[in-house]
Image (spheres, rainbow, N blue to C red):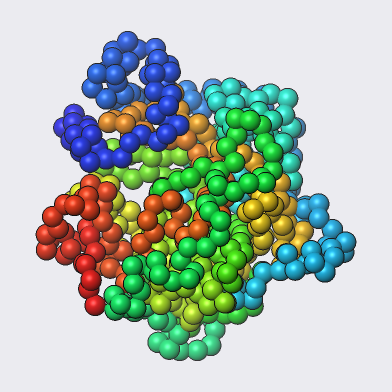
Length: 525
């Protein structure tokens, strides 16, 4: 174990990313939370924090008892979960469709092509933490301000969650259960996409693997296309936003209906999730959220959001990093004049964009792959290394259950200039208040005194839960999430190959780098 920790420390210090902004800003206070002088000094001097927690026995029950005591005080007389119909929360919006004017209906209308090209996604066959319903997530979390529970607040739901903004940006929806005990709601097993009914058609005719375009078909990675850069700027540059408490950022830049059409999929290669060749993608009881944004110039961005109650971090040399409660991931399809041009898959704090023509498809719907545990999204199955060389840190995807988000989606339109979310004509009773919640959808990163926590070379076992869809740069000019150069690939490499962050643009690239998928070939045709 000592060798592993030393190796991890060296790799991360030389090649790894910086600590998350929130965690890094509270460094001194976090270290001081430990009651152990030795632990505090080892953390400060050597970057090894909470090593003793790795071998401690019996701490799970201790934490569970402490949380249970808080749980009794927080939950009060909540109704039995078995008696709750989660779908009721999703039809509790305050809008009255019968009162909409014709102009208002136009603002709420989602173009038909958005649904025609809705993405399909493969979950990992061995996944432990499946898609979840945010309505259920709220039943098992309670608001905290930093590490202090906010007492006196009633249970919040999708229609009043934004009322917590009065406590400022440091509000967290913290689990009332010890997540290390793996309560059932955390895993979302009940939301595994169902085995679909048989459809008609020939798999070989309906599945398109995508094609690699000649370099000159997409000059400068799309930068010369009229749909590449649209709108007035990224979300943080817009004005006229809904007023919030002064310490809540409007947006945080990060670089990082029921459908009627059946689609046909290829035979699944996972031994656990084999399906007939003539089947449709399955429905999950966990709803996806569709947010459609008109960017002008006949350009439309369709954001598909996927929520999970838990993110299980990856393992490096038998040590796990990056767990957190709550997990929002998304994909974006950019259209111009009703035609899909590019698709973006979110991946940790970054992501990757591809031309629509290059994407794998079932019929004409693009196909993505969701990594086990982290739920990062990729354009192909296989291993996807990131941050560290030699594949030490990587995501894993395969052709597990095929999820069709279109079969259970709550659809909205969003005016990012005025920060206005509207329930669409597709799901007119969907609530909108939850969207404006400015806090985090999970626990704050645990203090060093918490036996569940440790950190090596700036990487935490538990990090802070994410902000919601409103903070994913919905007003982005380019289809990529961040404000950096947006490189749109016109090919999908083996295992979704991508340049790992340890390799700078000026570094020499060897044949081996290309072969092992750490960097894409230049000007390959």
